[in-house]
Image 1 (spheres, each protein chain N blue to C red):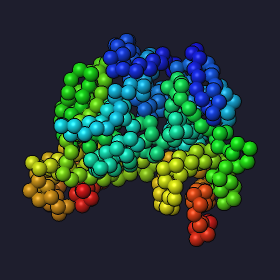
Image 2 (cartoon, rainbow over the protein chains, first blue to last red):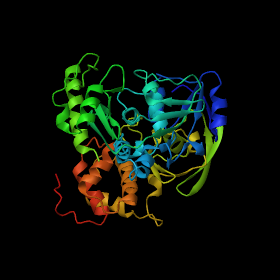
Image 3 (tube, each protein chain N blue to C red):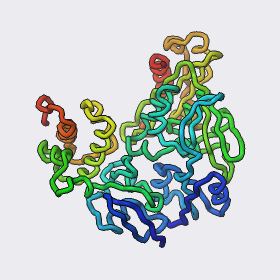
Image 4 (cartoon, rainbow over the protein chains, first blue to last red):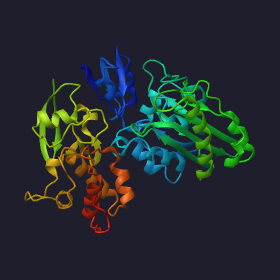
Amino acid sequence: MHNFEFVKPSTVADAVKAMAGSGAQALSGGQTLLPTMKARLAAPAVLVSLTGVAEMKGVCMGDDGLSVGAATTHATVAAEARKSFAGLANLANGIGDPAVRNRGTIGGSLANNDPAACYPSAVLAAGATVHTNMRKIAADDYFQGMFTTALKEGEIITSVTFPVPHKSAYVKFNQPASRFALTGVFVAKFANGVRVAVTGASNNGVFRWKEAEAALSANFAAGAVAGLVVSPKDMINDLHGTAAYRANLVKVLTKRAVDAAS
Amino acid sequence: MTTISMTVNGKAVSGEVEGRTLLSSFLREGLGLRGTHIGCETTQCGACAVHLDGQLVKSCSVLAMDAAGASVTSIEGMANGDGSLSVIQAAFQEHHGLQCGFCTPGMVMATAALLKVNAKPTETEVRHYLEGNMCRCTGYHNIVKAVMAASGQDVSAIAAE
């Protein structure tokens, strides 16, 4: 890994100042960024650790839903969202392994927007709001393709607010070696309809499967999507799974998520 | 170089590090605590697992500077005060939970973390929790048996394969 200057602010304001420097990069749990830097695929001049920013940590229920600080670890979300939003807690509890879950954070996952990451599907399916030091971004506007988001240079995610669905579940098919989602589906049932978000499948990153949303809004049962066809066009096609295989997984996992929703 | 301080296995320590120095490197090269093994250095294998402020982490994926001021426990801090093997270590010895021993420090640290939150895990829970720790001797059956035994459960019914 190339060397860098390390800074560890304790407030969002100081983190924003540190991020204004040339070649600065935010570091959250580091479970993706540090391996990326070791492989020399990233070489920031300044690394701004967010692990010491207390105001970016924690889970609490407010008027707009469940608010999760961006620097909150997967393990903390798994424990603290258990009663209020079980679908989200279960997703968090399935990321990586216990050691990774003790470091990795929701903000880091969303800022990176890996096409096979789990969290983007929950954020998109719940219609969550991404809060940054500058503004609020609706989930539908936030994800802009593989590793691409609406975040601007130097912008830091501070928290995410989730409207809590009546029922929800996330089901993924693990890529057996990496434990990333080969494909994963988050289903969220609200009073005014159902939202379905798919990760790990499309070349364009996480997306909403709108045909399934319409079918499930009319009838929230696994059988409701049985007649739908998922096109393999634009699906990821690699040695772990063909585009057609992933397209099929989208439907299979959606059915399983509907069955599992609670 | 920057001087950092932390508590390792109950002792106050300090040393010089660069921004890029990993916690695993600081423990091994800075402090000479080579019980923490580096297997893959890519956050996969778990051989470098330690406890950081009581939480299981992979020390190759934490910057030493990010751990400044923290309390770290490594495998060297796992034996009893008189130097005898702890319950977990003794169970690994008793049930042949190690072959070449390379993954063992990480396995012991992961086991200690598991038993802290789940005193009597089921076999399935043990296997799930150890997902981030690889044993390339593939000696998983006896590792799981050792973990179950360390939790005080009867392991006579678990197959030794």
